[in-house]
Length: 302
Image (tube, rainbow, N blue to C red; front, side, top):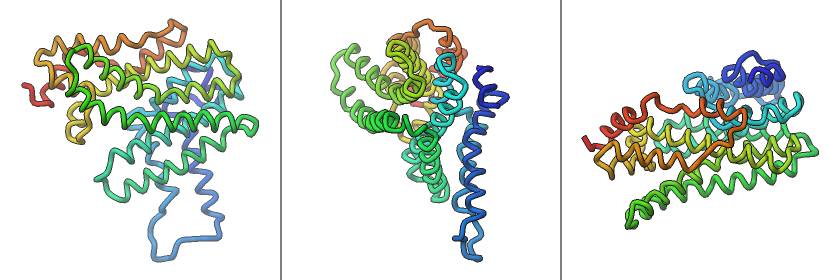
């Protein structure tokens, strides 16, 4: 992705792409410095600007931007330098928006200050994303994002109703269809990260469809591997996932490995030049059977 980051005036990938979002914090601080409204002298806190560091700290610790970076990889060759710069800002803002919103939903018991920081970043990231869209494209992008929010709102419903559906299934095939559907919906949360570059760059329908399908494949694989890594954390948080269900249901880890491979095989790459890099971003465990064996201990099977 060297050309991409050179076009943005950046030197490296994830750490410097974070600068795209950090610039919003700088702008906000400048606005705050010239604002006529100030905090009372007895308030020793900065309720907004300082909290914009939250996603930046998260990226440094966890190497986030898990939707924007794969999308930028896939569309790099299709866009001009100016289009790349605009797309980067829109996608980074949108990724922060969704990441912070997801965290807000998943942290009901978190401290109030942390939840306030999440809410602040949801608000500012949305501003950052949508004000970066050129006026001429704003309506089409708005429609794409509205569709995306509708899709995203359905994901928790699919996850919630998967559990009773799994209790009602009669065969392994029916169960795998339910688990696969969960990942189908969850992977669709990357669709708008393919749609926006296609709209802003004027990509033809065939190219846009290929990129969207490849990004869905990447996202589904990433989510499967993420669920494998997060079994213990998901157990503590009360989050049900297909991987937790498989580990509870099948005593033999070899059976679980086979079924996980079947889930992964639902999604295939097109073979385009960027696909190899998308695969490296999946964060597949070095030893999947060993990772599943370790995870099985977290669900009380061993």
